[in-house]
Image 1 (tube, rainbow, N blue to C red):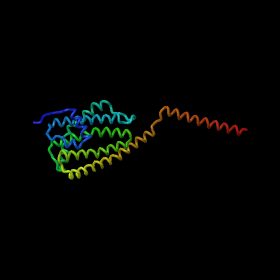
Image 2 (image 1 turned 90 degrees about the vertical axis):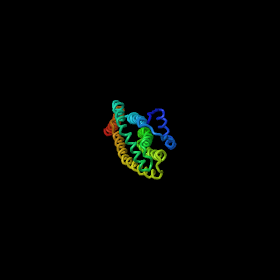
Image 3 (image 1 turned 90 degrees about the horizontal axis):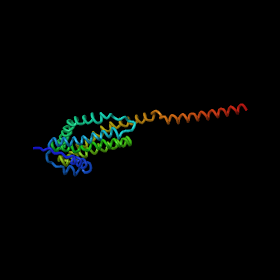
Image 4 (image 1 turned 180 degrees about the vertical axis):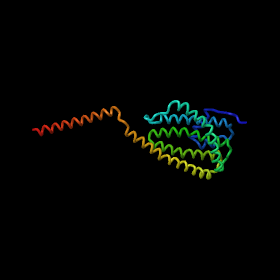
Length: 242
């Protein structure tokens, strides 16, 4: 009979280990069965990290002149939507891992596949934060970080499949190479849209209304030009009369 066990400290340790030493993490990951409730609560915690990352990306990591979403949306509607989505995303990810594991010739036990999918999901929140922060520096920095994570997630998937789900290395490498190529193609097709939006925003900013200080400075420069022109015209007129 499965027993429910949950430790927030263990979840934090798992998130750290999968980021900094994923190979040893999946090799040493216990193959004992866990209850579906334990797996779900671990997934829900990582989804909470993802929510925090999304809030940061829409507030702290956005340009100052960009309007922020209302507080009710950030702290009421969004968390409710994330919680409801967890009932759909959690099983879909687990079933997706079972499908890929079956294609690669690995173990298709639902418990181990759901365990692997939850572990890899723990890195998604960091991808959102780093990409949003990089995009705040420059659009190409954000795109570069996004491309790096597009390659890193399949790497984690490969380690999980070959180490924890015992899939053959060559077959898994070929399968994930095709999967990663599709991800890069999707990202490349969206990249042109991102760059176009960025250039449009830059163009709008270059034509934004002048501030009051800039208007006053322009008026002073225009008055000075007119004054010099009048003095010159008056001087030329005096010379003609003489």
